[in-house]
Image (cartoon, rainbow, N blue to C red; front, side):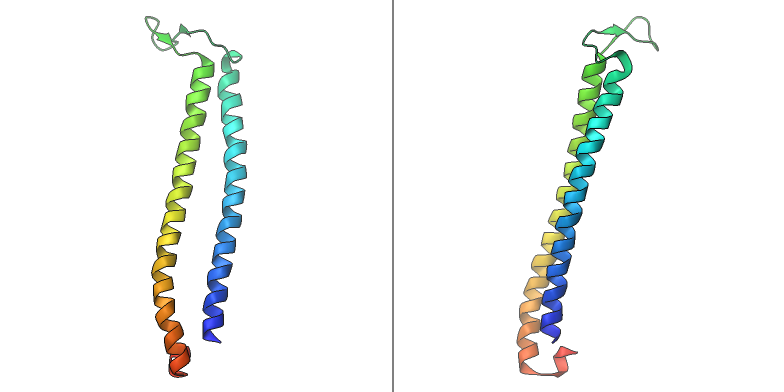
Length: 115
């Protein structure tokens, strides 16, 4: 019984994690589009450099470049976060799997280890 519960728990956790990643993927795409549109629409998706408002002696990047760099930065940060969470889960899963093999052996040997 204990062995069945351990396997069910691992399967459920994996299923939850991948469902969560699907929702995070949708969230990332939607917000990347919003970031690009809002930052790009400041100057109407212009590709021309303009005089900076905070320093009249400098030229600022076009709105399209700012929108593109900000969107790419957001996506890189979000993907890095998801990958680090996945690596942490996989590392924990591998360590737990090694312990599960010992637990299954103990489950077969004695009822004491089952509870």
